[in-house]
Amino acid sequence: MTWTTILIIVLGAILKFLMTPPSALVAWVLSKFALHPKLDSKDINVTFNGTQLTEGEKIKFNDYFNEALFLESQHIFPGNEKSFLNPETNIIPFVIKVKSRKKEMNFFVYCNDDNIDVVKQWKKKVACYSLSSEHLQKFTISNSISEKA
Image 1 (cartoon, rainbow, N blue to C red):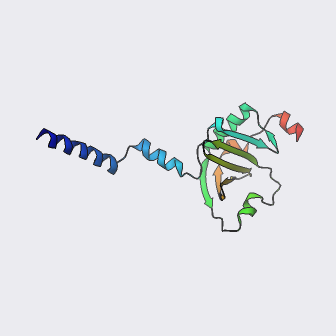
Image 2: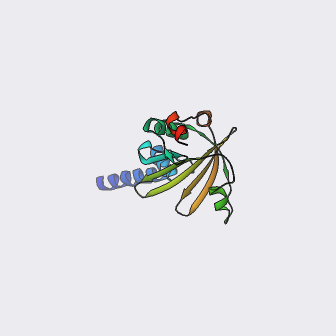
Image 3: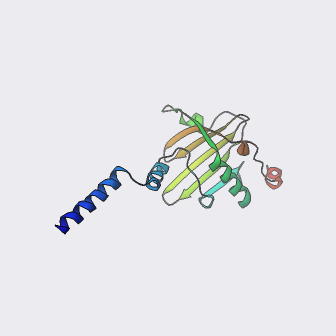
């Protein structure tokens, strides 16, 4: 009789866990499929016009990137990937290279006056979306980088 009660309680707990998983587990699973992921400053390299940002600038840029608000996703039709990766514009993008474990992604961040366009490239896939962030639009780099450019 006691074994039956224990078995029913264990099966009930497992069933409850499967039907309503903890929010931390749900957040972790959703973060794996997020279009605009939160990046860790230890795993990234940020360059502007071929020059790497200093450690302090990289951390600040990463914080602004993580805090930016996602506006909308832009659809890319098959065959148009190259036009998004190399757009005909005079804006020099910030390039974020992410390398952590098995992940290798590149983000091209184009800061316009009204919004920020981000092109995400991983494996052979390309996605494009827009962000809103006053801090990223006003982000300036130190004089040491702009003098080299």
